[in-house]
Length: 171
Image 1 (tube, helix red, strand yellow):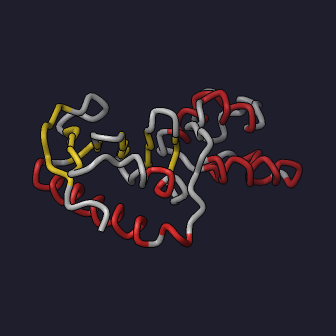
Image 2: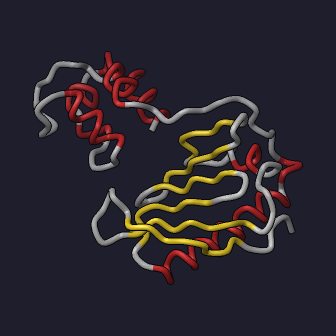
Image 3: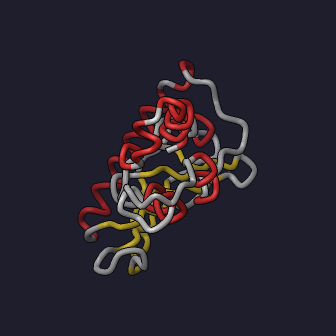
């Protein structure tokens, strides 16, 4: 076992969603050694081995791990936050136990930005997706309020198949 627990040390109001909280936890030991292995898992959107820091996308919000702190955004309440910290502890321990089967990440991975997404979109501003512009659609994709398939030109034009695949892998 790598980690005994992550203790809840503080909660803050979540500015991203009214009524939700940010849960801040402190692991029983520094996470530096396990972060490169966690960085190989799905839903990692950003990793910086030099800080070290790692951010996962969760269904609602994010989980960011530093050496000595964990932040979980858009949490319903303290009890849910404690459950999430326990589940995260378990996931860290399972990853550590299987580290021999993983190749530790050593390079920086950054979250896609709206311009990264926009550059892949057809940039027609056709409004068929329901957004005013392709840039607005790119932001909606990052916020996970839209899906790639809602871009009609990207979905229906075979010439955009590679772009669609690139966009899906980016998100």
